[in-house]
Image 1 (cartoon, rainbow, N blue to C red):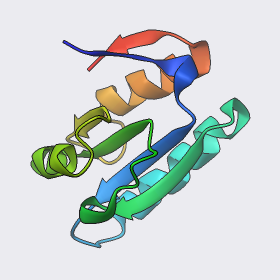
Image 2 (cartoon, rainbow, N blue to C red):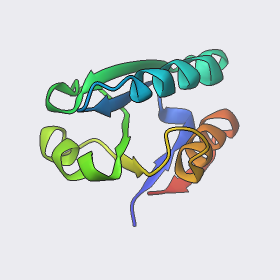
Image 3 (cartoon, helix red, strand yellow):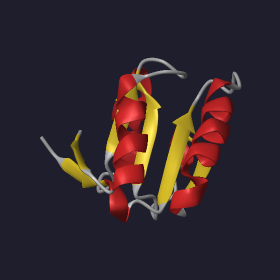
Length: 102
């Protein structure tokens, strides 16, 4: 498994496809949670993920597409827009400067 150093994350992308608004809400929530850590959180269509992202979070069904767009950027797939344990672990790692497995 690959690892991510939470202290090295400065740009997090929430990638989506459907445009239903849930991912925009997640990006807003993460922006608030990570503001004190100096992390920029952006929302992006999965086809247009910026190559300067440090990490991408996206719904499970979009993870393979995201990896094709940014093959050198860690992609963390999740199931739940709110309360997903993978996203919670990422936020904790960023706050604490921990390393997490993806």
